[in-house]
Image (cartoon, rainbow, N blue to C red; front, side, top):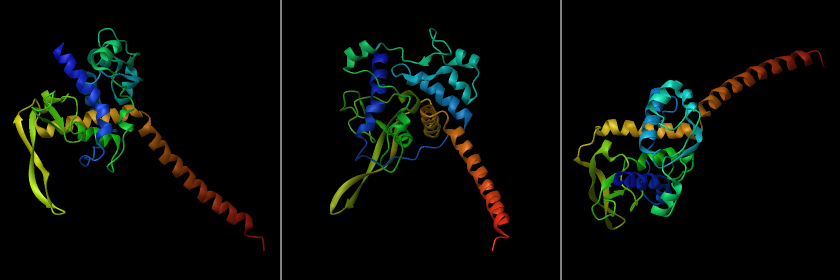
Length: 251
């Protein structure tokens, strides 16, 4: 039960945290992995294991994951809970009434979260990528965690077992006549299951999946758009030559 509650707090903070990023650190650029099927499949696995316990993705059906190269049997064997069917939408197991009673609100749906935030010169994917990589231990907070992208975030790190515990390292600099602390890097306090490089790759996979989930047809749309533009360009050449041939004897 304790683990479930901590997971819920983490899930609640992913979206609400986006609202507090203004005025925070600059967002890192999320890698574009929406065409990498292996990455999207790993991101789907991370999403189901770490996000779907509390959040829903009610506009996405499990069988839509066949678009990223999974078979229905693979979906059944690896991504479905025991009571779900492959044609069901991705709904959280957590009862909404219990969540509202425990925390005063229902966890928001994550289907479109990667498209719902833009700022700091970045996208919703950039925010999620930065947010999930800037948690650090802070014993003064109720959850024991804080976040550089969302200072005073009211949630722990949902992926802390993968990332481990770390703390930011600052250096002091003079700016406009005032001494300020600037982030210099990170110090690993306790190791996680993944190395820092592997963790960044995993977060990139997760964010890439959430970006794909927000618009599964985006790659098809872009591909079709390119062919349409090429067709129009070829048509323009034919029309131009036809026009020249039609008017060549007109004086």
